[in-house]
Image (cartoon, rainbow, N blue to C red; front, side, top):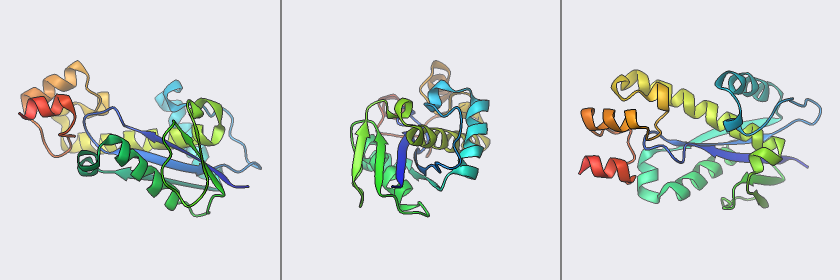
Length: 186
């Protein structure tokens, strides 16, 4: 049975898209060290992301945009990104295992696991891909908008980020429905 793990990255930031990944691991090519992406160093995540891309039977990463986050809300946008990630797999899964307690609507059975990225390697792999791809997107946005410091905080509402947002104003990469942005945008 082909089970795909599904996880997201970027629900908490005030800038940038939310990402989701779906991964079907290959039991014949295991990957040592898979765990929740938040428990890994940036360097280790990058190494594991490369191994996942090389060894998985199938993988896919998808985004929901800032506009979709503001229109739908962050939960619905996250579920949309998850649907897109699963739909993007080159191999159809028999079942999806999703981190959290809210399942996306999929054409296959879905099981949710709170803390699933710490319990199931396929969800850990999805966590790692979602995080590394979103971080790369934030670095791309940093090159366009360096004054916000996205390379350091990846869009999370740190004190330095809020100060930069106040100094430089709200631009198109910001989630206007999120309280700190809404307050500054007036």
